[in-house]
Image 1 (cartoon, rainbow, N blue to C red):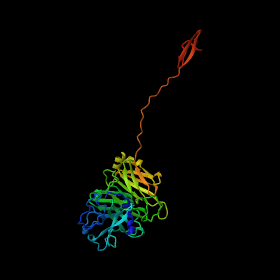
Image 2: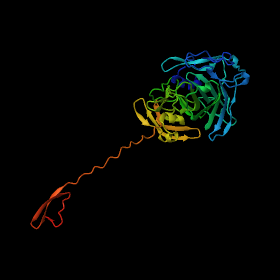
Image 3: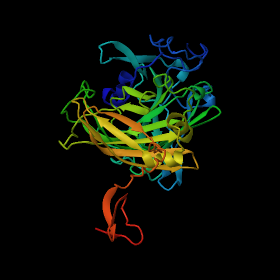
Image 4: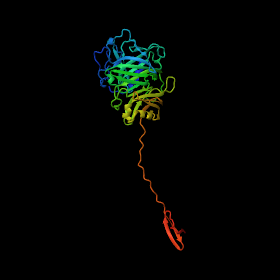
Length: 417
């Protein structure tokens, strides 16, 4: 259980959040004990702890997982995953408890919830026919839970240490929540091409799993390090933040800012800084993979066009051409990441990809500032320089005259002496 929960611990420890009032006491799936961070969030009528599949026979129709689908990269729907409930599992009789971990400051915090005395996982889903994990198994763990700071989707192969999720397939999650659908702010993840949308009470999350290095428990990846990863697998971790990103974003929509990165282990700062007009992202991971190879960092960011207009005062179609990502390391060194960006007019998104940086724990600063307007100076009048005058002597017979001019010229009938 500890190995499977490792992915769920990191973001919860490193995202500073404001705080949560419980859902209905008559819930057919009792929540865990109220966590100490709950009352500070201001959320109401939303389930904390685990979210399980929506099932009429369980009388669970809200704050639940409606469906999980698999898609090919060309958009073809491969099919739905099938939920595998444990034998004789009765949600109304389940007792949830919290896994308590320590924050980097040493404070204990309720992190993720589990079912007491349940031998088999209640989060098993079977892949569509013909699709398997890298180790040949056809079952995944798809765990959804409301934690301190965010609602997290965490999906791994049946054996986290031996297998990875199917390669080249997008996972799409549909979550039903009348309350949380209205609370999502920014979204962060470890998947490629992340997408989030909300329609009524249905939250849709989609992304392509990517190889993600996992640190050993207790490794301080948020500090400068030369640590090696425990293992590297394709898995999914998506966090939908329910607090404002640094109180600097104003009104936000779930699809305003969506982040994907293999440095998600240390997302302790993720906000828009109006002073510098930059999106600030603090990322981190171990420096080497399990084989001793230096990990190459990557980040994918989707920014809604209206944000480019608000934050940088520039048309998003033009802004994409001025995308810039500055990388700052803890030792004071800086560099400019390699960036590609394009504007998706259909979805009104700027799609940015940045790479060419390494870990320990750099801070990425994203901006789309256009060129400064050239300052037009008033035309200056041409200064006329008067020609220099000189004097000559002109003669005509016995008559002599002094003539001054620029140049001097003898009168008719006279010649220069």
